[in-house]
Length: 500
Image (cartoon, rainbow, N blue to C red; front, side, top):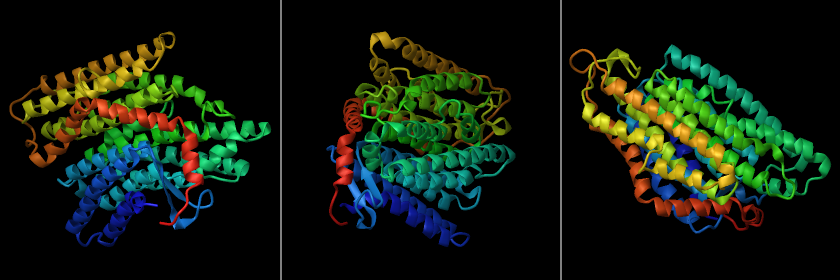
């Protein structure tokens, strides 16, 4: 076994512990530790992506206990892709935060590293109970990060967020306990084997467990009707926290993908029908998010609704449960994460230059850097709305091509209407911010290079995804094929041998 596999967990864990020891003593050293650890995740994620690109599963047995008795970490193409995406977003969000946002509350760097620990652990774990554990780690960190900077709006949104997720955690435990009572295991590979061979009288409990898991993961992914917490939390969080949260939503989507293709596959010998609701829920989520973006009165809330739209779009592709649909989703996933993270940071730059009006769609003094921020906003709007030639258009085109003509009506209608609605909402926001100004002179200071650079890089990656669309699509297609062949995952985990 390769020790590389456990480092995405150990690195943020160690950095978080060091920062806890340094709390209130050496804030400059805290910053250095956090930056070094987060920057170290990027080459590590690239190394793991290269390791997974060939299609081999990498299995790490913690304590050298074999599955299904011990805890295992499993790396495949999907988890490697998400680790790289997390490292990119986290590094750029942290670079933005180091310009002063990290000093707006206590223990930012400790919580930031714990958030990364939970996210990376969720992407790597091969055990359902440990998925719950990593969920709780990232949620506990996110509770405090959502309140970072204080204020009544953040407190109100954070309270709703905490209550909903505590309820979701309770349901997760009930589902885990039920599955353990039925199968005697919580290792995902072993669960797949036991559920496939389950007796007919156990089908009802399995359906209930699958439905509970869909509810829990749907809450994390902002799936309708469990999306109402997201616009308030993301719209009120500080910019670097909201940017990091752009990847947190994808943890729920990842869990849905892993569960529906491995533990409860639709084409398995003992199929569970709970995930048949996913296509309709995905399109409804997309539609509601698009309507919410039209009704937004603040730029950050609009971007938060775009995250809801992206969740619906991703799940619409995943719910096809075929290679073409999942390929489209896996190409679109990094695009939407990078663009929405960049837009959250850009919205903060705009708000800083508009004085007390901030990001509200109300007249304000002209911006100090209208041309520079206007170009970035235009780039982000084109990418987020899915207009050609950027990666959002390519992702949605792949999604539209994944359905046969007889099944295309609802998918094409909702996806295209969502893009059109998003374009209208972003165009209205841009015209009100950049054109409908009043007064003379900028209300705030211009953005400096350290704040602009992360925004440029995040939005510029959408251009890079367009230029390298062919190899990225091939990787996404290979990852989709791997997901739809769970037998290889099961064999790799249950028959893995060797010591670390």
